[in-house]
Image (tube, rainbow, N blue to C red; front, side, top):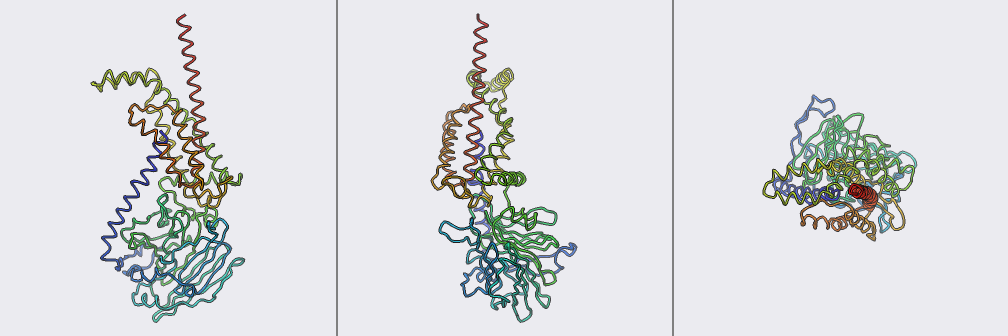
Length: 532
C-alpha cells in the first residue's frame, strides 16, 4: 500500500502537474506574443508606508530584453570581486555577469567551478528606468568602476559604480563581505524613478523533480511562489522582505528586513517570472546573496532567509525534518549515516501506526477465503454481500480501512523527507561510503537503486496482499520494477533513504508475520485439545 501511495505522488507530480504547467505556459506564450514589448501599468498605494510614493508609471519594460540576454565577453567586465566563497564579475552596464563558486563541494566532475548564470539571461542588478528615453540611453552608456579588482577574501571592501546619463547620474555603492554576500545602495539624481532586477534564477540544476522560479516574502511573513512557466501576468507586492529567484539548489536573493520594499513580477516570453525592486525617492537599499541554498549560510545572514528553501506542499513538515537531520549530522559528521539513523528513528516513532496497519492486513488476508465465498454467494445482491462482510469483519475484529488509515497518517512524513533529500544542497559533495562520493548525485553504478528494488520486491512478497482482482495483482507485482526505474536517476541520498526504509519495513513485517504464525499455531493446538 505504501508503494501505491508513493507511486501516486511521484506519478501525479511528474505526469499530471508538469504537463499541465507546460500546456498553460504554451497557451500564455501565444497570448502574449503580440504584446511582447509592452509594459504593464503599476498603480502604487500610498496608504502603505512601506510602499513607494504614488505615481502612475510604467513598470520595467521589455524593450531591452534582447540586450539583457546577450553574452558578455571578458573585455566587458569592469570589475572582479573575490570573496572567501565566490568570484563576482560585474559587466559594463553594472550588472552581475557571473558568480563562480569557490568551495570544494561546488566543483564539477570535469574539475571546473560551478557558475550560476547563463550568458544570455536577464542579469542580476540590471537597472531599468521608468522614463523610456533614459532607459534606452542607459543600455548604451557604460559604468565607471572605482576598482577593477576587489579582494574581499579577508576584509570587507567597497566598490562604487557610476553611470553618467544626460538627465541623471546613477550611482551604485557596494559593500562586499568575506562570506560572499553584499549590501547595495543605488541612487539616481534628478529624482528619476528606476527599478533593479534580481535577475533570472541561477541555472545550475533546474529539473522536473523540484520547483524553480521566484519567491516573494511579504511583511506578514507569507510566501508567494511563482514557478517557471506559471507567470501569466504582471503583479506587484507592497511591503516585501525578500525577492528570491531560485533553482533546485541555488538562489539569487535581495532582501531588507529593516525597511521593506515594493516588488513587481513580470513574465518573460516563456512565462517565467522576472522580479524587479522599485526605487523609492529615486533610491534603493538592500542586501543580496547569490549562491547555494545552504541552511546554515542563509540563517547566518538572517534566520528569515531560510524561507528561500522551499519544499513544496509539505514545507511546514519538511523544514523541521531538515532541522532534525541537521541535528543528527552535527553529531555523526556524515550525511549518509545521518540518513540511515534518521530513517530508523522515524520508523521507530511510526512503528505503532505501522503495526496496526500490518496487523489489519494480516487479518484481512486470513479472512480472504471467507470474503471470496461471500462475494460469490451474494454476487447478485450487493446489499446482502456488504451486510455479511461487515458482520464478518466485526466478528473477527478486522477493519478493511485499518491498513490504510495508519498509512495515510504517515504519508506527510514520508513525502516531507522525500522533498528534503531531493532539495537539500547540504548533500552536494557529501560522501557516504565506498563508491558514493556525492549524495546529491545519482549512484554512478546503480547499486543503491537495484538494492532498493530488490528490497521492495522482498517486502512485497512477505506483505499480505488483500487485492482480489487478478489484474490489480499483476500490476502491483510490477511496482518494484517501476520504482527501480524511477530511482536510477534520483539522488543517492534519496535512494539510500528508501532502501533503509524498505529494510526496516521488511524486519517489521517479518516480526508481525511470526506473531501471527504463533497465534495460528496456538489456535490449532486449542482446537485439537477441545476435540479430545
